[in-house]
Length: 238
Image (cartoon, rainbow, N blue to C red; front, side, top):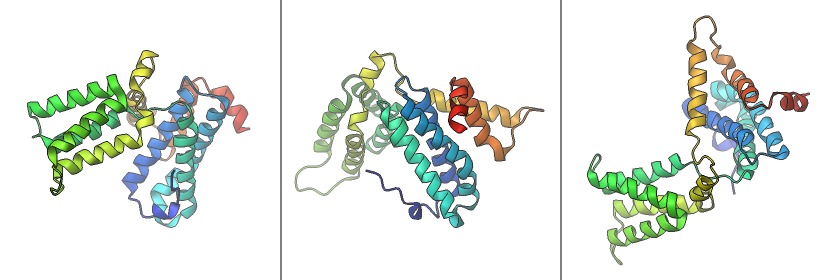
């Protein structure tokens, strides 16, 4: 369940508005590029991208006073993240899962220590080989070690409880072993990195720079072209 209420994000800082907007755009692109994409998910993803290109700039520059732009961006994020990308047999980006586990490990162990490295390697192996069941059981054992019955909650126990709750919320999306066996990606790092590199290069390229006000629109156009969705998009757009 998601609460999509623009009133909750009217005062969202510009940087967070930009980050969340680009994240939604990446979800739309991923939905289109997915091997499980369908005519239905493509239509939703393309509409999400269109809305983001039109309203994200205003949500960024004048978000506190533009309720319509905030609402449109929230709706587009829902279209891209839950209705389009969410219907393509999604998985939680492995980098997000590992980042949360790593942050928990930093509460348990000193930064840069061999114990922290061992924690990161073990939780990664459990995620990849055993999925939710394996890492959930391991975190349960760790929680018992860091809090005895009747004792106060420790910082370590709270960190373990927090990451365990996060993974439990996403347990249906931790299907890494299955996806790897099918030769499918388990992280969006390549897509996000490609977007960043491509857009970054065009913002700096001598004689062929994109204007910042048009970055989102040009990014979508390029994504449609390289994803072989160009003709299909124009049929829909007309």
